Image (cartoon, rainbow, N blue to C red):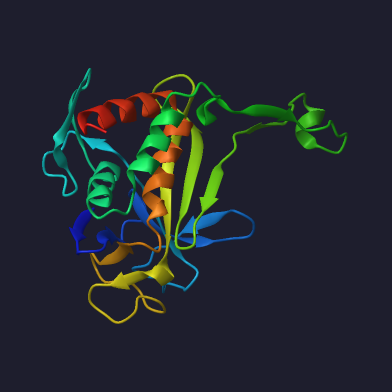
Length: 241
């Protein structure tokens, strides 16, 4: 992700042609469901949105959003602030996030409430003589793991829970959902009603009207996982917050 700043805003440039990447265009379905859009072949619609799996650290020194003076030593090696950390740094400089909000986030870090990442339940479906699997001794049940949404006027923060791929337990993933109608094309007047160009980027501006995005995204990490909470506590320390 590429970041530029003006005197009043942060502009994030995001790719829209990576349907299997950490930024992808999605189309709402019934309820809270959505599906990825292959927008190199399918025209973009007004209700589509960008789903960005946002991060806060990296070991890639070529990451465009890197904040090299926010350094943490971890077992896996040296990590530098990026993406969310860059938003916090630039947001504080532009007064899009206040010292009061930072203090509120630090208070939440020290609370001992239940973390979202631990939440799941199993529900068994009632037995049915007409169910083919039941006839042969298979019991159908559902592992229900909730997702969480917080909607702003021009964005939504989403916490998704999934099983860890290489370990036991669940992991929380934080997504920023940015409506296409609030994004700008870098090459044409509009991106709605057409397919995307190869490697196309679009811009999303963070200013006074949607500045709470920075606070809400940071808060989502803090309440989602103990690992995220501890990482952000160390990051805030490295930032002298």
